[in-house]
Length: 307
Length: 307
Image (cartoon, rainbow over all chains, first blue to last red; front, side, top):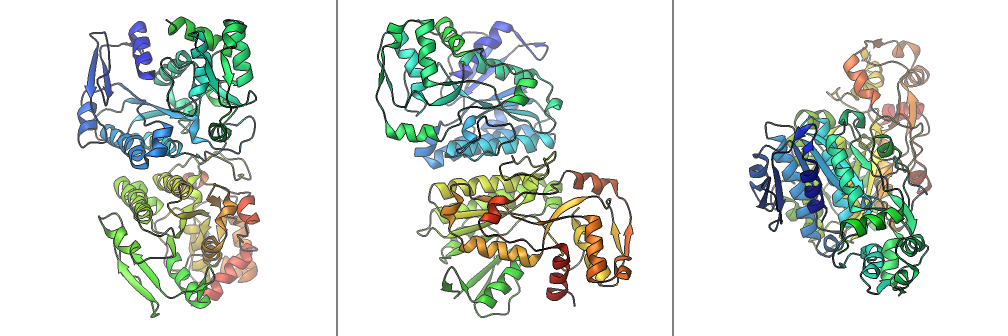
């Protein structure tokens, strides 16, 4: 999802790091849809031998590494999570290390590297103690990125994305799915189940803001990272109740009335281990911009994705 | 060094975790010296296929994982550091995961997981941002240990050791070598070079205290770790000047007079990136005990190692 939106934005702007974009290579386990002559889709499994090397031989100036087995799958299938989230990342980094170039590498990490209990807000220098295998694998990727960058193998930056909402498309099996669902389904005239209390607080970024983070990460001067290239991104921290109030304002109370409280203790327990609010002072000072409000996040969804 | 001292201590006490010790399997790349019928030395490279599995098939109740390529070597030979400090650790953890037992795993990490700048003192929840490949590899081992423990693959605890001083034996190439050398060499009647300023502050643990940490980690109730199994150990934080004053007290001003100031900007720069003082509140509350003073650290060396 994010890869597709990033591609759209890159095609719209036409340049990156002060140069015209002349090629975008899309890499996925399945053929990525695209509509531009600048794009080429590559079907590759980076954990396979030689796959990463072949792709890096294309000579990219910037590598966006978004690939991941998501949280629920990495928890259900430990070996697959390790293969995709850890081994494939390491293969990619090794391929870049052994290539003649040292491209900018933008690594999409996640606030899943953090695990409760937390101070509120969570400062930039708080220790990551993930409570999922996904978060662990993302954290290891961050550590590798920092060391490969320090050694000059490439020029890396890791950005810890908040929960991206409102995600377009169908609900998925992720425990976080409802954060988008309670906005998206009512806007489609469909009931949405709310499995947690309205008091649950969580940080959000619209897909638009998340793409903005990725592009700023590709363009910024990494010397400013002072050897600590992994950054928590700013987000809009709201309670579920505040999400619902925003939906009432941006759409209507009738639309928001389609949200049905349906407590699910399993989901509630998982969500209770997640971060609720960050003080992302470093990223903010370095020019990363969150959405202005949850109202704006809903508006962005309506403009960009609502059919 | 630490492995040998741990073995001695285990043989002296004769029991661990409430049971008599009936076998100690020593694993190293070279044959470990030993003098007891309870010990067996295994020459093995854990990064090789099947090696870790064969060792874990011996059915250990406790695994102490101390093996590492040290800082200077991991910096000079990146691939070797990754192979030994990361891949061999992962092979070992995987072998344990696939064995029927879930032994206690005590993982020797290091304060090298931290990199400057720091608050003073460094709290337990400060983020690790290593400035060496060794520290990075140790940090990744910690992350794996935490996830393997959370998933119930084994019962792990990681302990971040301060600089161990006074190390017996010859000086080595490590930038930290002088911390031991300025005590050990003068006690042998030999001059020792001091490459840094007397104001440099650093945390220390005697080999005796470090072995105590390992044994306490093997025996303590890991439920008390509350899912955060990696702990910074307490140490004695002293300046180099305070180390020298302690040597004057415990030995004599004449002995301490054998220390020759010989500033080395390269060593000074490396050391400036290291931690100087921790508030190891969690480990202290959990019963890990540092030496009482640097005077005691010197006395322990004289009793245990000075010939």
